Length: 615
Image 1 (cartoon, rainbow, N blue to C red):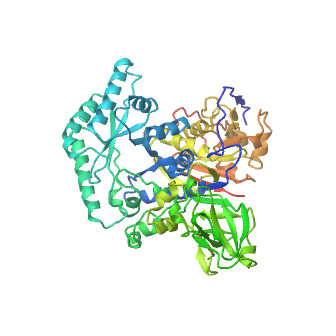
Image 2: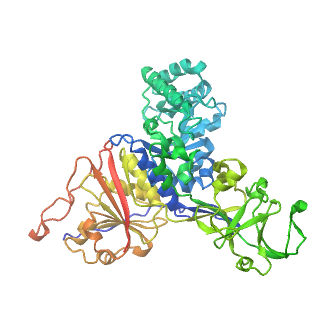
Image 3: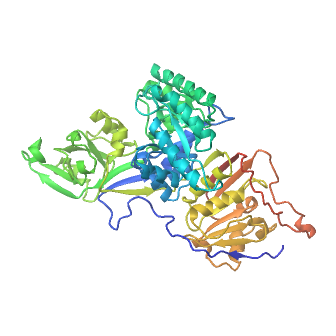
């Protein structure tokens, strides 16, 4: 084997990668919101797969909606998980929400659709951060065109990038969207600005008023209105390329509305988006809804136990009075934390797999639960510090009556109040400590449009990696392995330029977590007995257990690994050699792969799949 140099990069980088996310306060809060990243990942992949069913040759993409702080799951964490598991774009309500994602290092397209056309500071910020803007009125169109025109006038042609705009169509919701009385003028102004390369009109979108009722005739009327709007935009010379109208319910039941992209929200967080059980049988509804996994659990410890004598009352107003001597527990969660006061005496919590009723009024900071009669088995089974689940994923438990029951869910609380689970999910706030579990990357397969989308996917996958991880990249020459590696490096915030490992065995990149880029074929030749040992024998500056190792041309190496690894395969339409080209090593030739300066045709789609291989 040829002797190859080892390179090390030494540029300074930031150190904000791989934080736990959420509210990393010095002291944990009493009320904990546990977010399961793996459930978020599972849901994103299920929705993304479903979006491909209507037209497999031209599958609809997934815009993950992370408004309202990711439906209270944490927008940055949720966005990273969704982008690593099938989403290609993000949707938010406000420019402020979009800027937060950009400042967290998220580079994927982000669409914001609620903003003030008179707020020039926010418009400038949106253009500065490369945020796509939805335009619901003529005033919004003019605000963007005016700012973009000024920028184009003051910049060189090569500097100016037309801001991306999505046309908001009012198809029947009568809320946001260009109204019929402004439509003709909007077409003229959008067409003029688009043809002058002042703005880039990427597509159109609308919002359904009754999608949660699949058979509501208004859904078809809105689709017809939207189709007509798209035709008129195209006739005006506006090349709307990516159009979308499917929220979560329509993403489940209406594949005829998928267009080029679906735009779900609550389904990504594991909640059933449909109003009636009958709707779940529509199209793919039943299958997809059954796959969704709620990702949020709200819980708090029992901070005190006490004995309430028969005849004594509990909480404000004395609305509950003990019939017998009763043991109670105090849970530190109240209406200031998002537990509606209207649930007073109408909810139960689960402790150690058993449900216990909440009694008395919900207070600002706490609720009281009846654990059972003094001396009873169920009361004795609960201890101070035990966790009380206010709501979470469904599961089996023992009811407060001793019969089989289900764990309390957000949907149950919503039905009790006569509201929707969206409200329950987004209500907990202020003193809630958000805790994340799981990596947020489950086995998956996605199609990406181009090199930029490949790097964005890799950047998001990087956030699921940890020190000591090994990533094995497989695929033919020119499939985009180095392009993918560049995205990983960007997500890990490491220093140094990542290039094809043509002239080095291993290249080190310092960062918050060191990154080692390896050409496994050059490292091992025809021997695969101990790949990590071979790498460790090199004169590296960093310890392998403290680093993330990414190995190209490593399909043969993988079988010899004794540790878990992430196998990522990239495929392109034109095929290619599964191993580096070159003479056979046994004949004394050079086993090096040829330089691959054009690693990726930027406009050619790829299929990327990944799986965790457990040892």
